[in-house]
Amino acid sequence: MKQEYDFSNGKRGAVVPVSQGKTRVTIRLDDDILEWFRNEVDAAGGGNYQTLINLALRDFVGRSREPLESTLRRVLREELKRAG
Image (cartoon, rainbow, N blue to C red; front, side):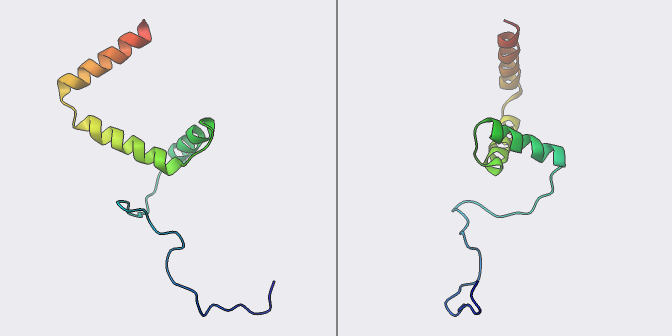
């Protein structure tokens, strides 16, 4: 380790800029939920658990906009596929 460091050209702020269209937020999640997402990413061979959470939220939002008839048809197809 050096005795002194030169920070005269240093810049303040985040080291990695936030991607366009993304906003940094602080959110509190239950430990078991966070652990589930991390385990899913590990089981898939790696990746980013935050991306997986984002995809799950996007899926939820998309489904909550889905008309009731479409929801029922989708659920019935899924259940019939599991039973068959």
